Image (cartoon, rainbow, N blue to C red; front, side, top):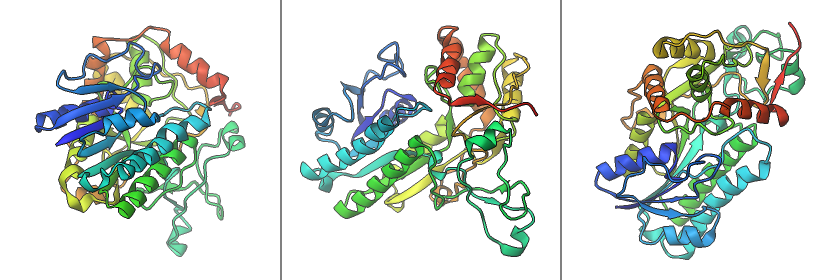
Length: 378
């Protein structure tokens, strides 16, 4: 089949392109090589067999050109960060998805499309599902907290607490029914899911949305101001710097290796049981940030005490771990653990590290925009 990957020069897109080529498909990539993610231009890891179109998914003509003779679309182009240019999240993530379906319908391509697969995010679930360790025994009611208030975080109160008894809540696995986006990126991704699934149903375009957890591995950009613990810790250790651990480091997170994400992407391509569904794609095991950093030190053989400054990123969830049983019913399993992702990313970093001042620039940017702030003394 002839397959288009928007954002295909990026982390998830390029790995998926490699796997599709290996499976015998023809691959076209549409990517604007955004300076913030690709400061050196075209990445050298893109396979020569890929047909590349330099363009933006918001550009009607560019997207129309990229769709010619296409059977499948992987819509991975996205805007992700903790920056405060809120409208950009919706322009890139939501509007481009609506434009994709608009063009498929207007051009008559809807009837020939084998599938559209949209990259969503675990962020859609917001703070996720919790229970009170005491009240749940009586009520059996789960709780879905709102984003933590700024005054709560400034006071260093990291945990969600039961509104009735005040005890810290216990996190639970969150499945695809949990949709409570609480920041602009998450809201834009939730709207992407709705656009894809509902317009897909309406116009007979088999569509799938993939809610990726924190994807880790080689080719993950060094340059986003915010792109997860792997990048922050690895760069700090590489440059002999003590990284910051936000809050108390006890946040539970769900990391998934890029190879497992690619396997999920290819699985839903040909399985009709995936059509018109949203799937969590996670690693299957919770990790605290403290444990993750300890593992990084052990595997990289670089040991530096983290900086613990009671700082926080406003908009971060306290805990979030995905329930992947829906995807597992299709035959998928995560087969690579976090340690493998750390080793693979560390080798990638060693092969082409960015400038030393990159971390300083990112920290300064997030403090300037008040994404990073500090709580008072305990």
